[in-house]
Image (cartoon, helix red, strand yellow):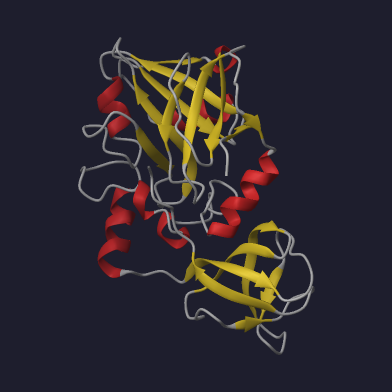
Length: 272
């Protein structure tokens, strides 16, 4: 598989100020003390997922937040929700950048762009951040093509599969949650789930035996009497569904499009 580039619009915020690092550290799930780039979830106080961002420290002591599938206005609202007297400034730089994903076989050569390895697609991939107008010389691929690869590999997406009604652990996003960094918004709930494992639902790969799946499709018991899950992502007959944790791999459920078989648990792939 050659390298492909898929343009994925994203909000880009620049965070600056004396308290920027400490503030971000106390708000998101990533430990900013470790590494040169960070995949972070933003949770509410109940531990549900509000957004995903890539967080990039810059040489001038500012921070770039790159948030796919969220508007700059909504992301700024989430990031600034707990600002009180902190010395933190948030600037929307979305128009200055173009964003996307480079994926497939090959090497992501750095140039005018920033490329960060990502485990969010189940294949070798990099998040790409480039100045607006930069020429991306790779073979272009539609977002639906990359999404089909992600779904086939069983990798969850925010907010499609995991949003304001889900915990990260329900959807296989544990890899983006730090359990050792100390306090942050939603941290107490994360610690409780880690210690007690009190989940009622999990995200699983699913496959229809006959017809294409659709978002929001209800999965029911064999007799159709009880709703046991819902399709969150779909590509043809393959999908990801949030289902009861009691259901095992291989179980057959009924739906409006016929029988649907449950597969493996969804989880992040391996970063390069």
